Image 1 (tube, rainbow, N blue to C red):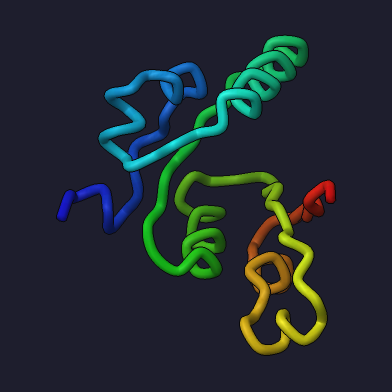
Image 2: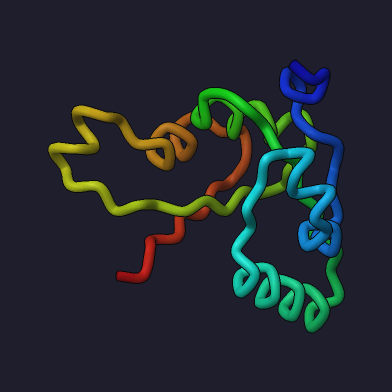
Length: 111
């Protein structure tokens, strides 16, 4: 076990996500196209993008990250579970919307 597995990784600049050493260290397999789009938009808007990787229950870790980083807002994805699946399995996005200490935007998957 690594120390960062309990408290999350350090802040990682977006440009480092294409570094094979970084992806191996944190067990990542980022989508190249998504990273390129994010880098392009960040450059156009003049913002720096950083990521912090947490391990564990995503509902709890996302809510904790709001205070740890700290975040002014949070954007998360939604898999679009059916009402029955959401009731049986729970929904990360629903939990985070109701428990995070900052505004949350949920982006639905484009089917």
